[in-house]
Length: 127
Image (cartoon, rainbow, N blue to C red; front, side):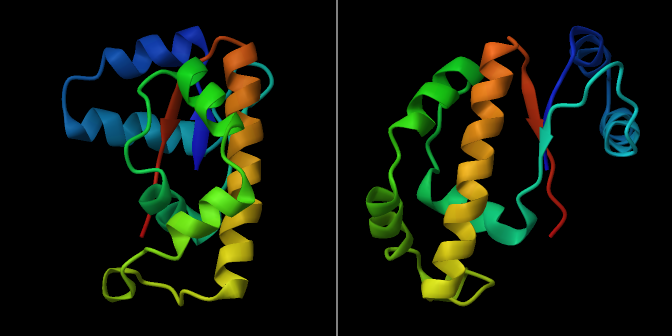
């Protein structure tokens, strides 16, 4: 799950001092402790393949949003086809790629909106 943080949420996250506090912060975030309109994006299990295709991404939301705009389905498919199946929990096939591509387009739109709103993001995963 991707979340674009408000200024207050970013400050609260940066004020955490240990893993337990970060987990508490994330739990509150995931429970919908939003101040105003939430900006989030779910990826279901597609995050794993997307991560493997985009493994060396930029650290800043605006840079990520810009970089994601250049990714097309052909490029993603070429990278997807190079995923090591022995290291992947899903089945590497056309259906899984279409699933991954769909969720990638959702993430790309999330980053576009987060960049426009000048909001940092955080990504959580439960595997």
